[in-house]
Length: 107
Image 1: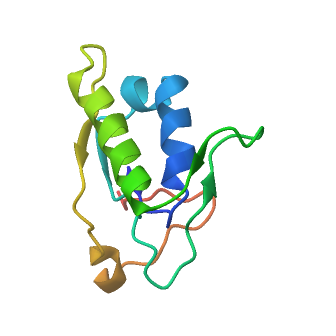
Image 2: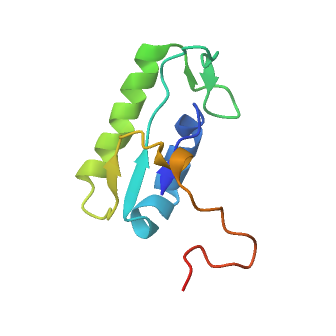
């Protein structure tokens, strides 16, 4: 699975872990955490609806990303291997995206 969602990983990744979707269903995850504001206005990032948990800056974003990745890495019950490589090879992939009701790989 590729997770490259431009800052929303701070909201999606914890849900994938706490629901078991990540560790019970996904063997390999490739993605990146976007904690550098760059040209985007990432911070503050409100993590919960009650606004009690907010990432205020890059340092807090990096710390949370490390903690979440460490949790998955040390868990005995998690089959997921994670790579933080940012693979953009799909940009040069000569194949069309599958259409609805079509198999992704031709037989």
